[in-house]
Image (cartoon, rainbow, N blue to C red; front, side, top):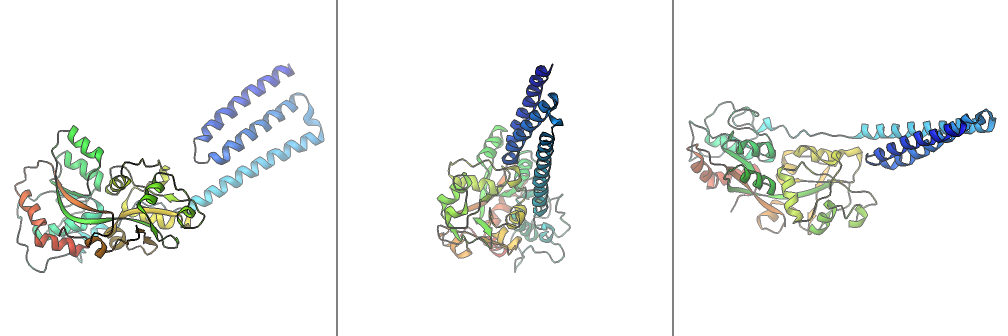
Amino acid sequence: MKIFGTILTIAVFGLCGFVATIIAALSRDAEFYTIFIPALTIGLIIAVILAIYGKLKNKLAKNAAIAFFAISAVSLTAFEGFQAYEKSLEVVSSQDVDLSEYRPFGKNTKAVSLDEPSSFKIEHDLPLLDGATALYPVYSAFAQAVYPEKEYPLYEGEVVSSQTSHAFDRLLKGEVDIVFIAPPSKRQMEFAELQGVDLTLTPVGREAFVFFVHADNPVDELSIKQIQEIYAGEITNWSEVGGEDEEIRAFQRPEGSGSQSALIKMMDGISLMNPPSEDIASGMGGIIKETTNYQNRKNAIGFSFRHFSQNMVENGKIKNIAVEGILPTKENIQNETYPIVAEFYAITAGSDNPHLKAFIEWMQSEQGQEIIAQTGYIPLQ
């Protein structure tokens, strides 16, 4: 019976330990649990076998077993306690800036105004506008110049912001007439084609795609190749690019967001690494907050569009990285020395609204481009 009990103990505890170790290997805490679980399993098997043969009555064996399980309990408690402490330091926020401050005709609105009456006005059949968080101040100002004065709620009505991905989906469904976003991703364009939707992309302004780090990070510049290798998972420590000996925590955005599409374009066919889910920031503001605050460390890198990160969020805890030695200043964008500059678009999808063509032509006119410049973006010319 003792031999059978020994075999059964090894089989049952061994199988359970093996399965638990495999599960642990797939978790974020694999480094600890893939050692702890096998060690605990072996300890349990030895203790049970000793009990079967009556050896635990021996004082030395009994004390050894007590010490082993006490050390295991302390190790587990210490590890989980430290994990809880680290989690308490995280500032994980997907909230963006308060876009209600940019609503057209709002009290003390931050939406810019022309110094003269707009040469183009729409009184009826107002086109429905939606778009990226970062571009809401632009098309809100367009509406303020062209639309009649009234209340324009942020989340419903003629001028809303539901972020890039959702705004693009709404355009395909015919729920809005124009969306203002960065160039759609390849997958988004393929999906539109699959849906039989014919898109018209009209450039209305330009903006720099920027990378930023914590203000205390000693790294001030990176090459495009270095950025690509960081986001491909080939460069993993800041010491490899002239910084301190710290792991690089490279935040990304969800697929379909404007800035994530810009990152994919910048990668130029190089595959992105798959980040842990906690390294994906859902909001544009979130990626800035997490880069500055994640566990109070300065090892993060994030990306956004220049105006959003510098003017809309105004977070003094980040600094923009010079790419190929060039900082993304307004002057460097205008003279085209900063290497990552892209146009942003007013996109339509066959709406029958009678004002679309003239409205978009006005956006490209001197007055429309003046609004682009006053808002903080770069005019087409």
